[in-house]
Image 1 (spheres, rainbow, N blue to C red):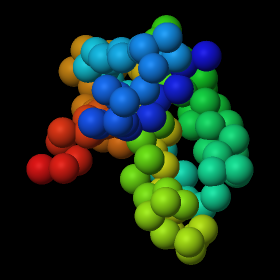
Image 2: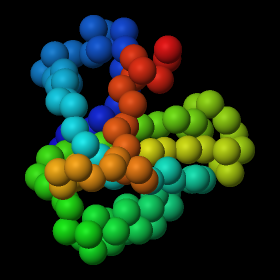
Image 3: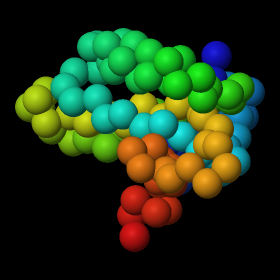
Length: 110
């Protein structure tokens, strides 16, 4: 299993046998923001997956999640936000809107 969790400085404190650092390459992604509890994120995956399948634009590669606001940030479940980012191929000359790149941790903090 590969879990994408922003760990920043915590990486150095985790036993090496259990966690391995992985840098994901840039990718064109279809992005949908999930609003609410993480337990319901399967609905967002289903909706985004349906769009990607209908447009026949999906490609191999890891689906990414960016945790914008989590239970650690707010106790109000309605305020929690997660970006679900599905790898896609854009046709030549195709505009990226409404598709866009997921932001990296560095881009989010700037």
